Image (cartoon, rainbow, N blue to C red):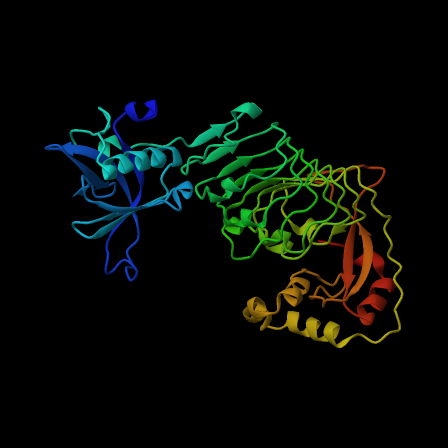
Length: 414
């Protein structure tokens, strides 16, 4: 028996569900936050389960009463104990891995009839006042301290593992559903798994890596509702997926020091909370027309090869496509907000680009005329005065194009 089992009384703070054998597959009950403790009662090992919310306590004898232990998902913080009398399942969820491994060792000793080390079994069950509070923050400053062969605490809220020369994203982090802050900066990461969308993070720092692509994120994923800050600066990004801005809760975005040739525009108009956007040191030739209307506190765009403004756009002489005409009418109708969510995804992405005609101020379809107009608002923007940014603006029809060309001085971006 390892020394770790003799250090303290065995108590675990986790979610627990007790279910009958006959009804476990049909039960709709949810696990409740509880404190699980092992106690000694008249020479028998007893497991006490104390609900944290109500402080109610249930006890079950486990000496010579464990029929089977289900340990397949222990590394995920889950364990199921099948009792003989009464015939019940005790299902433990989201426990800290280190504690759960200790519990499995103790239960195996009890199941095999071996003696339990002194100090493991308590004389009284845990109460609401002696709940265990797991470690919420993990900061790793040396590579040799990284838990390559161990698990992460399931209750972690913050993980900082910067400057450790990690080459791959640790997939064990994807199971930390309580994680709110993750800093993996200054490593050697090249890819970020799409499963990162299942986390509930608010802050994600991935700067100074070798990342070449950001995964496409599902609009219904938890990350879209929780992520407020993302730092992808100093990587090797050449493009971002069209659905990048489905992360509509973002406040602060840093994409500087990459190789981006453009910024995604779909859904950008829905980011009402966006206040800081850092795009310096990329290869941008223009900025989206929606940016001047955003109430940004800081927009950084210096060291980009912006094209000069070009207001001379000639009619193409080619008839507009059916898609272009239909999309213009559809976007201007009252039906679009109601039907937006049921459109095919590739069509919805194209229509999610908020294009407003510079002349008539109405919505444009998917194939409008494009012009480059100067960015005239100098408030809260950091740029090169010798090479100021230009805005990619739109004109919806040849009629608006003719009107604009005859009086260009009248029409400016709001």
